[in-house]
Length: 121
Image (cartoon, rainbow, N blue to C red):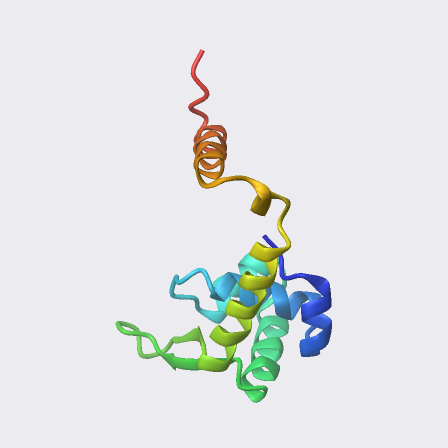
């Protein structure tokens, strides 16, 4: 899933910044190194981008729970609010929104099977 372009533009974010926010919103602990790997950029590029996001109040650096040399990048409440706004927009404008609840559950199960490689014979 991607941040809708119009919301990213309204928020003044680049494509890479929106990708970073999306990846950070997945709830996993994320170091700058891990984020750089996921974004397929070098660590200095990721660090500069994190600096800009932090300056805007969308992310913060907190100490790693077990390694004091490392910082974990987290969404701030403002970053979470932006994520929530994007999720709401995405959900409301999704072509799947027209499906009833049971159809969405069925589609989800089929997609999970496809992803897990368990398509049956």
